[in-house]
Length: 157
Image 1 (spheres, one colour):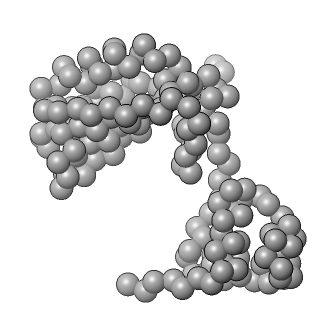
Image 2 (cartoon, rainbow, N blue to C red):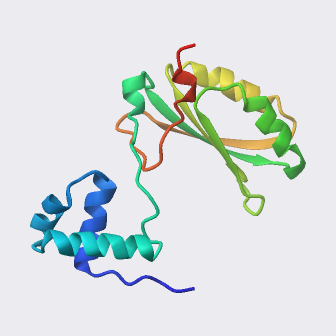
């Protein structure tokens, strides 16, 4: 495995782009005290090397009316994970990840418009006989994530 070596300028460029992927190279160059061409060349090299693999627009969940992000960690019997995924498919705005090698082998992320919805969701999860343990983390304010939230359900039909 080859580890990429970044210098101070590469790191500054990445920090700018992680904060705003559409930031002008000329603005980044001013902050880094280098030319715009230097920033462009370093960006191109980081893309070519596979360090930068794309850019994205981030959606603020609060602007869509979501007041809370909930992370639910489950210790689930491996044979029950598929049934759990099917059981949760009807929920808006959730992602589910699992890793059978970990004790808390399922991670569910939910965006809630009302905190009272959490009780209904956790009851639904507890009905699954494969769930042995549940831990819940609430992110009540200032939640911002580098990943994005699904927006397909916002389509007007």
